[in-house]
Amino acid sequence: MKSFRIGSLFGIPIKLDLTFLLVLPLFAYLIGIQIESVTDILNEIWGAGISIDALTGGMTPWILGTIAAIGLFVGVVCHELGHSLTAQRYGFPIESITLWLFGGIAAFSEMPEDWRQELNIAIAGPIVSVLVGIVSYVAFVLSPDVLSGVVAPETLDGIRFVLGYLAVLNVALAIFNMVPAFPMDGGRVLRALLARSQPYARATQQAAGVGKIFAVLMGLFGLLVMNWLLIGIALFVYIGASSESQQVTMKAAFQDVVVSDIMTPATDLHTVTADTSVAELVKRMFSERHTGYPVLENGRLVGLVTLSDAREIKPVERDAYTVDEVMSTDLKTISPDSDAMTAIEQMQRDNIGRLLVVDSGPGHGMETGSQDYQEQDLVGLISRTDVMTAFNIIQKSGAMGPMSDRESQPAD
Image (cartoon, rainbow, N blue to C red; front, side, top):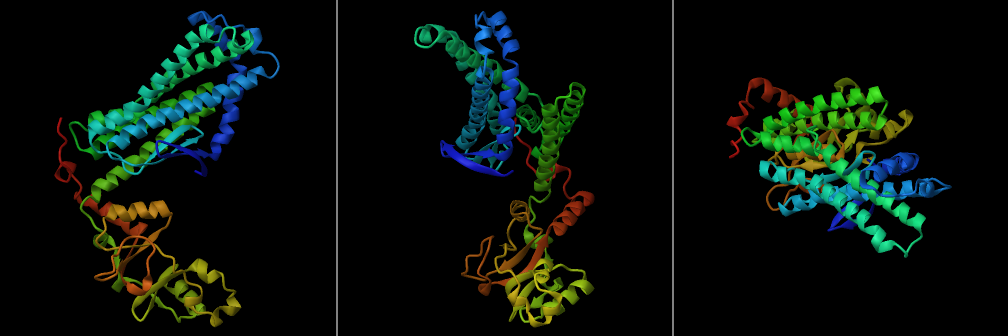
């Protein structure tokens, strides 16, 4: 998502996704056209006594719709803060809270695998939403006594409409989020309860399966009533359930695996020297069917050259250029003794297909990331293909299961 930071709360960055700027006016419009029906409900159920005529004239519906929509998203931020602050209490850093098309997302740097912690984190958000709804309702009830004579009657009616609307919507948000459609809050509660008596990865697979069923049902219902927002949420739930289930399953599979176990060793790699001409590089790419080569100089890693780099030189000029003039030296690397999941997460985070595996030797303090290549030896390369091949072998060979052999059983 393309997002920008607007501030922070409790040290947690708050961001707005570009889709939020599209959905906010839509929500304001939808609330504006529902003012009459919502006011009827508030008057009938809570005896609000709100004058409909005072809310439906001129620009008033759109002003109230905008205020209520902003208030709704403030409630969403509070909901995500409930998750985030509870997670921080357990020692899990929160990267950010982002408002986007379907509400809010708290970006966890790491998900808890202790079922009690996940249960408490998952229910914290809905609890906060209910509390926000209660506060809104109390303000709705007290506002006539507090504001009567201070503001005009039509302004008081507008304030009470917004407070009543937010009271109902925040409680509805809490209830909706408790639907056991993983990875929504209710789905995470389900996973936490399942993880009480079985491994975390298996509990995730089961919760994800339930989430997919709910997503399909939600999508079908959305089609029947032509509710595109509901259809979008259903797609988000289905994709999210599949993605997290795969991530957790992969983490369980690679629990005791390090990069050196699954990388392609340097002896099997195709490499080029820094003084190789770009013309010769392109010929090798064609004959060897490779689009990227580590670049070595005196046996030490100095860069990486790809087909994209070679394409920047016109065909007629490629004999005059060498690899060291077009190669990249700002490369992502990893050490051979790093966890395989660390490599996977780094490739996902940086949106790259391969990592160079390097050994700095004693005293160089090798870490993952962009490095000083003059001090490193290339020991291998790990790619997404290597990862998926190893994952398929682990699954098919049965090395992963029963998962209880690789994971300790959680205690009740």
